[in-house]
Length: 372
Image (cartoon, rainbow, N blue to C red):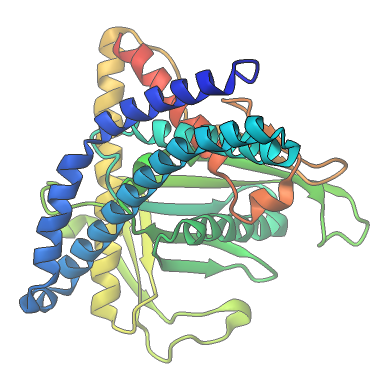
């Protein structure tokens, strides 16, 4: 595309943006914004804190999305003038600026186009992310904490609120496990491709002989449950333990046994919550996490049954999915999409949108092949 005349490139981008605007149905979103603003202005809204937060998050998301699309449309209309000005004045600096803006617009419109692919039954939900240390000892625990920071930084960069429900600290360094929610519409659809095993290769900071160490952490992403979801949980099939919350190095976060761990005996699923002061609140949150994991398990089982009837023997995509190498060279590579970068520092600081977008395209392509 770089070989095309700028006017042709702008025309193609404008056509792509028009398609995106059509799929996103901006008029319907503007109508919903007006309705949400009316709800937000009702003094009674905050009598139900959970619903009020849901309304305000949805309103903020829609306003941001409309602003983003309208801003890109204005930039696209302005860039033609910039190219004309550069040509009229034979100004190399203005031409360079226009070319840079054109590349930026191509990237931004591409990201919007990826957003239109999020059409799965749960894609518009908020996300629950769990990360667990796997093989690799203390390095795996340290790696798990690095991944937690990466995703929380990613959410922060996008302005997405997060709630950390549970963090189980390892004895020497790092964490054994963590569960947190990303409170943004389409967070599940955006992040579900991150599900799988993440592999780190580096010189271990915990090895006094400075040997290279390979460690693994598993990332699990499920949609947040809503009231319309029906999941039967037999209380007799639950083991509920309460314990005292703790921080790094055993530092007490709480002086009471308020943290709650729930084990679903038939499946072996274990969930915990320790971020609230109240044991009852932690129990309610842990039950919500358990419902989300059971809902996703049910969905995967139903999907597996359909695939078996079709004779689809393709294995689950939730296996090893990304390699992070810090020594002897620096590289992050997704094994499914082959997206790769040497800027490991930026990736670990949450700049993972290129990987996420590629995963969304990969999953959508795979699902289309399955449905064919």
